[in-house]
Length: 330
Image (cartoon, rainbow, N blue to C red; front, side, top):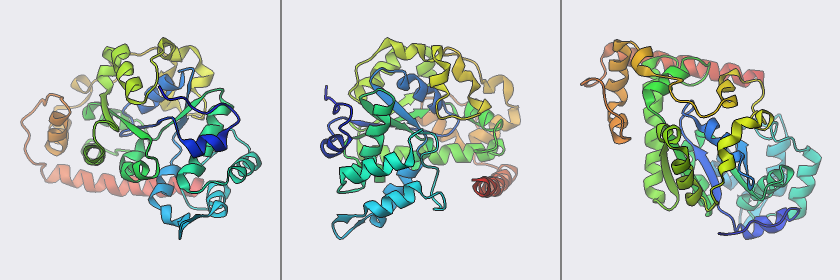
């Protein structure tokens, strides 16, 4: 197994990049935060909760790397200037901006990958860990760019029965607005990850079903640990015994309250909680994706009808409006 650099050598760690860089991705409300809490309980691994900015920067790499040179100044300005309109950055990392600026500048990163590694190595050291990882569901849309910036990146795609995901989405003000919209959103993002994963290959891309994680967590976590070159440690299964650590970086998010209990099946059950009409509408939109992932269909629904298509259009409009409202509050 490869060894990460010792604490206090963030610059060397950035240069060598000897350890694999795991990214947990998936559709929101699929259990990615649960998996993050489990992995973060590993004594060697610190998992950032939804960095968001790394994917954006990877997609805009030319903003920082110009003519073979890397602009540390622009990187730090985008990272630390709250007036810059990029996704959320370091508010949940509990690292002082001055210390970040000094650490990154001292490391003299030569490209975007090295600069980001400096940040993550610092986060890991701050939490007494040797390795780092990231959990940002939305990175299903930037896996290709992240894989290019970080040759050592390994992706763990957590999937969950989309009908249960739809139920969970309806309880929050982000994601799916109604069941057909949730079906469309779920299928679009699963397909995006699958396309990127096929290009990356099995060595870099692993699919794990949420239901399998609950049914046999030791087996699922052993597969994940092997994929990211990490020794399995049973303390991961006791993640809920340290509620303060589990809540680290989540803020006051009541939709993550279940993280304070052991792995529990049946928190969502589309069979009893979705109407027959909604099941049919969901499967008319995303039934083929369900089957691809090994889930059984409950209906023989064909193509979505006018009502389902109209609800998708309505959901996309409402979701866009909600996103604008959240952006104004930042």
